[in-house]
Structure formats: structure tokens, C-alpha cells
Image (cartoon, rainbow, N blue to C red):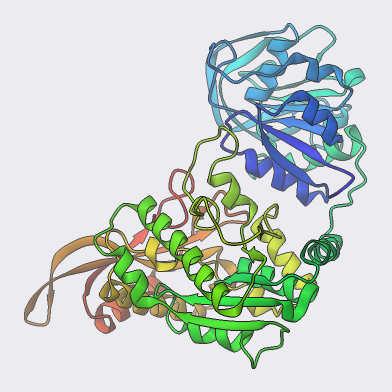
Length: 513
């Protein structure tokens, strides 16, 4: 799709997707691939550079991921990060050992500012370390280009071969000048010019959709969230009335959301497309009855999505393509190559083996959330839609712990509505990455008036994030939390306790299930 590309080879690191995203922030396209990707395939992809990710293993463990050392001889610049740096050293004849002192967290690091990698970086800078092993001896032809008090080789390089390595993680925000280092690598080492722009992506995607679809009919899975909305508008711009958007009101939406989606994409909205609203609430409640396991709920909801689309397709005649708003974090978290599955996504892992369409179109499959929003603005979608709060495909089904019932849905809808309303009143809505109310499966004794109650506990969640791959708990002012708590307990029947979730991602996810 783009002439310039950086390949991120994943060795099991938790920050693999962050590396790709940071490279894209430099206007250079990057893709994450498993370390099992064949060398010949890498050559065929003609990357401008390759980045080895970190990983939890030791290079001396026989079970650890490894790569053909011939990769260092193909003339493509390589940056090794953490485990990737140790692997580079190990494969090229250096020595990796267990460090006498492990390093974790913020670390003062001294860098060689004459290195291309550290141009315009402060000689003493702050980096993020997370390692037990270290490079004790650099390979022949390499020089040390950074060090810390505990680590003599915080970075190494062989400029003649365009091979670079950092023990620290430049991709995380904790590394003060990490983005500058990555930019130096892709521009000064790899020679990239930076041709990854949303304007060109939108233009190329619309063109490719027209070519692929021809005169075919397309059915779009429209949820009303940012991802599916941008996908729908892309298709509308490309093929107009050949597109039919099916909006499934599965009874797991936020309060009043069904009507809001119809107002935007329905007959009275500004977009050229066919719009069908399917009220399938009871169908979903019946399917989910008695189901408590999170993955099982996701699979059921995903499967039902497809079944509904098949039924609607039959009603409108022959349909050639199905469109979904799958984005890159969905793909990665559902398991990339041999990477672990964090959680399945209804639009990735929940698809049945047999689908009654020629092909599934996922125009946003390689975009991160912030890139989706940029694409939305390029398409002229109003900002209030583009920056709408993210909402998962399985909806409130994964914001309700345990069995999903109509009563529980009502509780979490009402609680969430109050929470979002008070957050907006306090002027905090635009400064938060994501916030919502969820329903726990905990019931506890309470006293309301002169009566004993035995009701549910609602959990409030708010996080700050730029990439939705990592997130930190947001500090909501106590007075706002107090007001939200008071209103929920007073106004939402069936709730007598409100809690605030302080968990970051990782170890948690942004959603509850």
C-alpha cells in the first residue's frame, strides 16, 4: 500500500504494537509481524527498516524465540530493543549474561550524541529499563553508544552495517526522548521520507474499495461507534447506494444510543447509503441466558451479529461483501501469529467458518484508534462523532460481569448515563481517554432509609490513554465521584454501592471483560 514500510518483528514483547504506532507517528508506515515470518517474505516486502521487539525470555533458553542471523546481511537497517538487542548481540558473536543488578523503571542514561540514533538527544537523558539479562560484550564491529550506572551497554551500534540496539524501551512514553530516537532511526538511519498520511490513506482506500466492489452490493455492520462509523462513511464515499448499513440494536447499547445512531445514518442523515435498523434485543437476551464466561459471551454476540446480517442480506437480495470496523489493536489482541490471545474481538475471533458473502472488507484493519479518528476528520465526519466515547462491539455484554439480563442492562445503562452526564458537566469529557460504568456480579447488604437492601455494586472506570494499548487510571476529582455516586444510588433501582476502578492496562484491560 505504501512505498515505505518498517517491519516490527514481534518476539513476545508487551509493547510490540506501541513500537508500530510510534513509527507511524513519524509518518512512516509500520506493521507488526511474528518472529516466525520467513526471511524471503521479509525481502519481498522490501522494508526500509526492521525493528526487533522486546520479550520476556533469555536468549540462552532453548525455547526462546530466535531468527535466522542471515537477516543482518540483507542490507536493511535493524534496531533491536531490549530482548531484540540481546538477540542481535548473541547472534553476532557478542556475550549476553544475567546482570548482577536488574534494572526496572526510570533510569538516567548517558548517550553518545554523535550517534545517528541519538542526534539532538540530551547527553544525560531518562530511559525506561526492564531487564535482567544484559549485553556483557558487544559483537565485533560494534561500539557502545549509551550506558547507565548499572548497565555498561545500554545501547550499541555498528553504523557501517546500519545495525543499532537499545537495552531500554524508546517506544514507551517513560523514555523522555524515545520518540526522537525512533524518528532518528526511521529518517536518518533508514532514509525514510515519511509518506504515511491520512489524506492519502483515505484517497487510496476509497479507490481500492471501488475497484474491489465494482457493481456489487455491500452490507456494513454499523454499531454507531467511531470505528464502524468511519468504515461506513468510507464505503458511502466510495460506492454510495450500493452500500446498505445494518444497525443491530442488540439491547446492549448505551442509553438512547439506538435513536442517536439512526438520526445520523438514517434517512434524515447526510450520507448516501441505505439504512436498516434491526431491533433484536430479545434475541440476544435469549442467547445469553445463563452464560457467564467472558469469552463465551463475546463469541455468542459475534456469532449473532453475523447471523443477523445473513438474514438481512437475504431480505435485500444478493449481497457480495460484508464490511466491518475492525482496527489494528483488535487484530493484535486477538492473537498475531504465535502471540498470545489477550481477548477475542467480535469482529475478529467471533466469525463463523462459513459466511454467506464473497469477502469481508475491513478498511480500517491496519489503523490504530487515533489514526481512525484522523481518517474520520479527513472524511469530513463531525468532530462530535469522531471523538465519541469508544464502545466495544459486544456492547454492555462485556460491561456486565456474569450473566446478562434485561434488568442488568437497564441498571448499567442508567448508571453509565449519569456518570457520563456528570463527567461532561464537570468539563472532563474531552480530557479522558475512556470512561464508563460497569456492573459487577457482587451484591452486598446496604441500608437505604429504614430498609435493608441486598443490591448490586456499580464500578466506575476512567482511564487516560493515547493508543488504547496501554492506559493509566484517571484521577477524577472526588467531588465529581461523590456526586455521581449519590445520583446512581438515589436514581438507579437495584444499586446500593459504587466503586472506582484504579487498575492500569496492563495488567487489566480497559473494558471489564
